[in-house]
Amino acid sequence: MKKVCLLLLLLFVAVALPQLVMATVAITPGAQSVAYEPGTSFEVTFLIQGDPGQEFTLSAGGELAAFLELPSDSVTMNPNGAAVIKVKFTVPDIAAPGKHSVDVVISEKPAERLFGVPGNVRAYAAVRAPIEVFVPCPDKCADLSFGASDADLGQTAFFTVNIVNTGSKDILAADGQVEIYDPQGNVVASIPLTTTQNIAPGASASLNSEWQAQGDLGLYAANATVNFDEQSRELQDTFKVGDLFIDINSISPTLFYIGEFTPVFVSVVSQWGQTINNVYALIEIKDTGGNTITNVETPTLPSISAWEYKTLDAYLNAGGLSVGNYTAKVTLYYGGETSEKEFPVTVENKPVMPSAEKKFTLNTNLLAIVLLIIALVALVYAYARKKNRKY
Image (cartoon, rainbow, N blue to C red; front, side, top):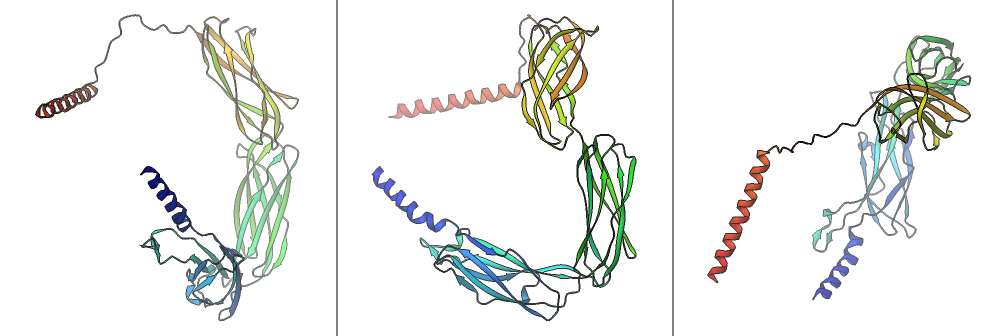
């Protein structure tokens, strides 16, 4: 009987599983754009890919769905698993400036019934591809973006403003400048951006500037002021100025017990825009006179990436130390360079646990639960014995 059930189960899986798995479907290109020309009809072509012989439904979606004409309400994949469709989109009058779209929606056609059950009980594949139209604003408008690149000390940081004319009139001229702020918030440089002229509607241009990185390491801010014709905008970005330097952030713990091997963790952060290989640390415990009492070296990190935080670890033997205050000097070695930092640490005797009798704190909630369980077990046991006596 068990073998028969197993065979029936395997047969069911073999037949049902292919029916329950979603079909794959893709449409290319993923998005297309047409010009904003109200009343103009555009024929747009899409390639659909799926399983050979698979049938899909076609529909329109999005805010402009009423203006999309489909060739049919379904499409069937050829033996190669592909089909080409052409749709017709008529651009309407649109009052609101900006991007608008209509979606061509391809959906797996549901099976009518599956093992006597309606086919809509399972999930079905669907994709959509938008046809986009951009409505320009009636005056001079522009989309602006600003980016600043990281730079190592003494190298060049690049600043770029991208301008896209989203209006219906030419932008006659654009220029600007970039102010650079150091990690303390002080203005350290003010540099001009390049200029550009005659940006036509729908066209784009860029303004650029450069600065040789100098000063402190860390996070800088850049504030770009962009002027185009009678308008002005401000844009912000941040960037890092680095060098072949790894900063030591902290060491933990800072309390050690005599006679113990204690794990010690050193937190570091790279201040360089490139990968640094083979990084390790030497931890020295020094007394108040500056004498090294004990030391330990961490295993070598194979690499630390640009601007990355890492932790090095080792085990420190506090057996040769006495109670008192010490200094932990951490020296980091990497790329032919070193970083050093000192931290105050304390050494104490390990606390001794009291030898008095252990006292139990009674948890009334736990006691109530235990008593309830005992009572339930007793009731079940009594009921079972009574039942057995009847027979």
